[in-house]
Image 1 (cartoon, rainbow, N blue to C red):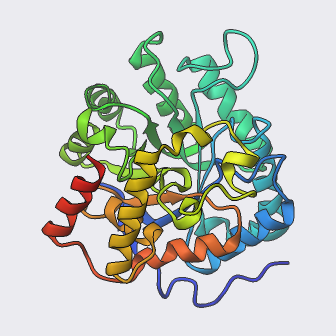
Image 2 (tube, rainbow, N blue to C red):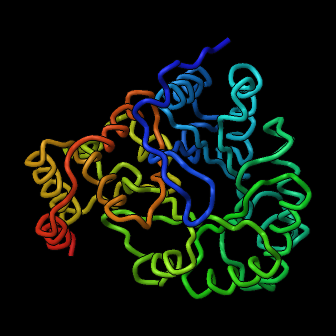
Image 3 (cartoon, rainbow, N blue to C red):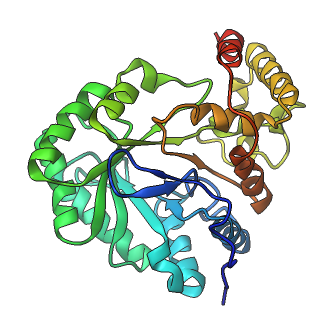
Length: 329
């Protein structure tokens, strides 16, 4: 049975999630990739142990994470049961529902039918009585927002979730959802969106500004642009890279000559700062108080340790932030 490192809380910084009482580690572990049926179970365990031993208390899942859909929750549930169950009250475990999960009209979207059934399935797969955060995974224009938010509220009232979250929402829709949830007195505390040096959608669609205005946290997924903002692709595509092993979201044709030039320029800047490209890219996401935590994925424990270096080094000057913008735009 796994024994956690006694010094696990010494170096991690924990940030308050918006105006709520919930704190999240600066770095959280995402199980979007590498915890499905194509991954090695022993490696999954080692990644979870490495994370928790270094103060990463937050493990982020969704109903459809795999491949196959549901398999990440099954594998994480096994790790919880066999190794981590004694530490449940020290963990923040989140899951989501919104995208395709099962066949037929009730297997995706934002209906009450889908969300509450999916949460029950997720709890069963992980062997849990509750999750700490339950998210609606995407905006669903076909379902009334009141119905979707009512389902999140019901999940909390039933004791199956402690907090509610929204993922992939824009600013105006989040503002409407926030009012509905506030009226219900539902503890909506966090938004999960893609945000990195290359992808600044939340700055353009109002989400980042609205989260600040409403006192809600933001957790950034793909802060390293699925590995593009690391040294992994500086010399081409490695054999064991995600592009080769799981081509669902990251494709070789994304690495255009222009993109490679930007990555190399950013890497040179990181070296001048005495940092790795990944360290600098994560630090950029956390450059202001709006982002509570960065959600990192990993295929091996060493990558988690590398990502934790974001806690070290100097902050950006205004000149450096402008230079990054000039490289990318």
